[in-house]
Amino acid sequence: MLIKRDFYINGRWVAPIAGRDCNVINPSNEEPVAVISLGSEADCDAAVAAAKAAFPAWAATSPATRRAAVVRILEQYEARKEELAHAISLEMGSPLKHARELQAPCLPWHAGNFLTAFDTLEWDRPLGDHAPNDRIILEPIGVVGLITPWNWPMNQIALKAIPAILAGCTCVLKPSEESPLNAMIFAEFCHDAGLPPGVFNLVNGDGMGVGSRLSSHPDVEMISFTGSTRAGRAISKAAAETLKRVTLELGGKGANVIFADADDRAVERGVRHMMDNTGQSCNAPSRMLVQRGVYDKAVEIAAQVASETKVGNALEEGSHVGPVVNKRQWEQIQGYIQKGIDEGARLVAGGPGLPDGFNRGYFVKPTVFADVVPGMTIEREEIFGPVLCMIPFEDEADAVRIANDSPYGLTHYVQSQDGAKRNRMARALKAGMVQMNGKSRAAGSPFGGVKQSGRAREGGIWGLEEFLEVKAVSAWDPSQG
Image (tube, rainbow, N blue to C red):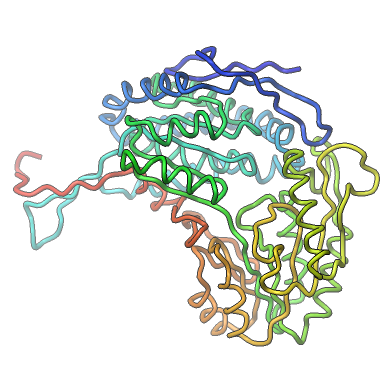
């Protein structure tokens, strides 16, 4: 078994002050692969104290100094990217090909986009020609607590730690206890890149322990959280006592609206997108709304694509989907599948139980339900597994009504060859993001939602601004610099 160092605080790897051990489980075979310590409030306090002590000097550095530090972090990634991909595959079940091509490269992708945006920031500028002696000054908010999930672990670390460091903040990261190994490697990147002690700190822990303490700590000025809507509510309540800034990126139940004039690959593309990362993505297109005239054919295609989707061990080479992250998640998904059957949805692919050929590991059959009725449990709730719900609709207005009738509002999708229709749908759909005809958002585009999907905007210039305060100054003397 691999024993990892415990916490990274004030530039050093340190043993916990208190806490308990926790196994990290390989979801492909249910075997432990590492032991970590779950920190206590005292461990969290030590990390926050280190970040608080480091903040004045780091905030005073030049933008060029902070930019150079992030470039050095990226150099560490390039030297160790295969190790990072392997860790992600081992701890949360992303197949090696997926981890190499999509999971691990989130770090250079987001960091590169942040650097591009960073170079455009005006840290100190006049308010305008009408007020030549008024200035707008951008300043780092202070010590920030970063709480990241297990499903796209490096993606979320990159979207939080990189802009915080660039902004001049100091950080305490609590990664998910389900996938802490990649976060420890990132801490090593920061150390070997020469970040000053206390600028980046890492404390492993669970939500009730370290997460709660970070959320309520009086010396933490901001919490950036990605995870469940339930946990987001709890963090908001805990942070309210100290009036922290809170940014939340939460769940989703994305509608993928496929019109009769969609391209020939739209349904297949939607199913494959749903099954990516074994359905463990908050922006997964988990509700496929299909116009009535092409609905039966779409169901046939979706069932075939799902049935042909290979399932395999995450550490095996090749194109396949891996397991879900843990036993609790597997059991919850099984419960949703059974609920769909019990409530009368038509099962056309997959179903309950392990896939053929598996007797261990948290593997789920790629599953498709047809004839799902709005209001069914599987249509309303985020399943977070490879389960697609198909719903027929009549016309554009019907599609908008069904899509928007959700407590979530993260990402919706539209498939149509009619540009005017796409534009109308983009404006009518209530979501932070709308992606159409299989086109991903461009570099620097913000990621975030509305309603119970949270209100964060991560990525690009918006993601940097979340870590900055705006100071308005009057009677500025421009002759003094």
